[in-house]
Length: 100
Image 1 (cartoon, one colour):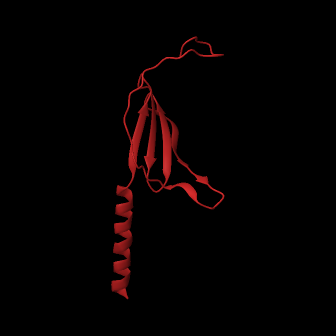
Image 2 (cartoon, rainbow, N blue to C red):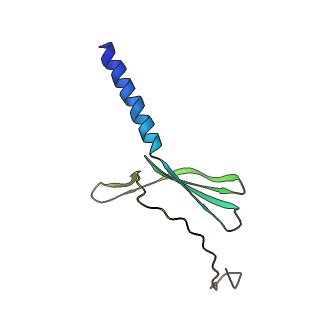
Image 3 (cartoon, rainbow, N blue to C red):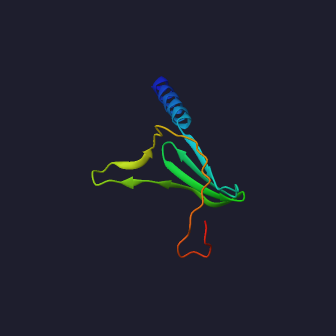
């Protein structure tokens, strides 16, 4: 009986380690680097926001339950990710600045 308990605990420990290794981290920064959006995709899909190094939004889970009962956001898997820098301006409508 003791061997089974030890074996079960070892199995659970290994599954936690493997699950922790699956988490992928992504960051999106504002042009001046003041705002940082962090996204962690693993067992849960989580996001957080920092402004000038200060945590504004703590890591929060995001999910959606479909009518079929499927939950989007649990065990999130990122299939592809491309890094791209974008520097564009556009004319604003009903905003205090003409160009954003």
